[in-house]
Image 1 (cartoon, one colour):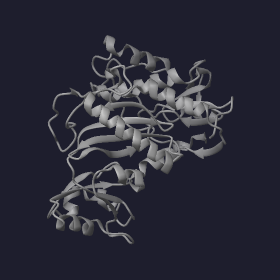
Image 2 (spheres, rainbow, N blue to C red; image 1 turned 45 degrees about the vertical axis):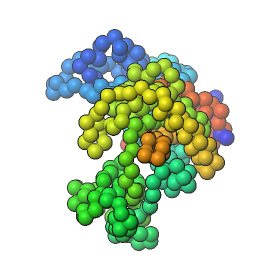
Image 3 (cartoon, rainbow, N blue to C red; image 1 turned 45 degrees about the horizontal axis):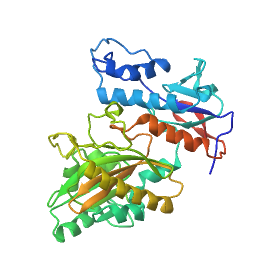
Image 4 (cartoon, rainbow, N blue to C red; image 1 turned 60 degrees about the vertical axis):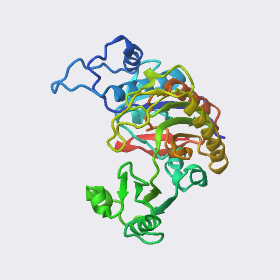
Amino acid sequence: MMTYSPQAHDVLYVGGLRYPPADFEAPQYASILQAFQTVGWTQPTHNPDNKVGDREDWVEDGARILGGLAAYDHERLWVALGPTKARHIATGTVMDVRDVDKVTANIGVVHGVHRPFADEPDMQADRYYRTQTFKNHAGRKIELGHLNGAGGRDIRTIAADFFNAGHSSVFLKMTEAKMGLAKWERGQDVWELMGDSWVLIHQEGKPDAFLIQEFVALTFEYRFFVVDHMLVSGAGRVIEHTPLDNQGTRFCTGVRELASDVWDSVPGPVEFRLDLVDQYVALATKVVADFQVECPSMLEYTLDVAMSPSGPVIVELNGIRNSGLFANNAVTIAAARAKVRAAQAHVFRPVELPHGLSAVKV
């Protein structure tokens, strides 16, 4: 394992300011506003375009900042406000990020900067589809393929095999891009399926650029945050929920059968289902233990699960930094990540950041 030296500093990358919701001064947002003010942000009360921000995005940004402020030593904590300036929390000093010595890591992405440098746990999580653990717990047939590439199998051949085996549709997903999710029906042309052909063009010819899955109805999606091979927090995939909706429990029980952004579904009511969550915790406990054996260096990730006709299954994994929080406890997650960092041994190595920034990878 690896740790920080006493002189090392932590940086929370914040990025650009989002417009707040119209009622941002309401009492329920007091802690979020305080977090923004602590890092030097003043919320705009008006703007020339009369824009009103998205409540969920704005609260998540503030909750991530709040978690970082609660979990990390302010004497060693800098907050990067955009791509060039950083504020030292203990003193209020503002300087160019490039002048902040020993920048060690991004402790939680907030809007604007998505991954300052390559992070091995995030990269491993993003490639979950290659693991045996995922295949063992996916509850559906899965195959990697390419489009007009070499090696492996073309996705059109794979889809034809599914259709010939009696499946009326498959689920097509890109492996390296957060786009291109589609339900592929029998008889559909793949170029027609994706709509904007540039989405496919950018992946054309790449090996294993696509994941084709047996189409299985998945409901009541749920997200766990995993740190140091432990389930730290869990909450249902309820789009309008934020950490302010956390029930004060490690695993929130609020779930929704279908999220409003899944296949243009109409969102149903939020249900409080301890019975479902108990099943998810049992599955996730097994999955995390399996990943600890198969991918021991993958210390941080989010694990999405759902209910299938045959029982709870894995949906996917994601890197922890850019995963939506829903009602998960941002402070608990940040505290777990800080504990891991405090317990690690380190080796500093300069790395390049966007816009010419520099940092030190641990």
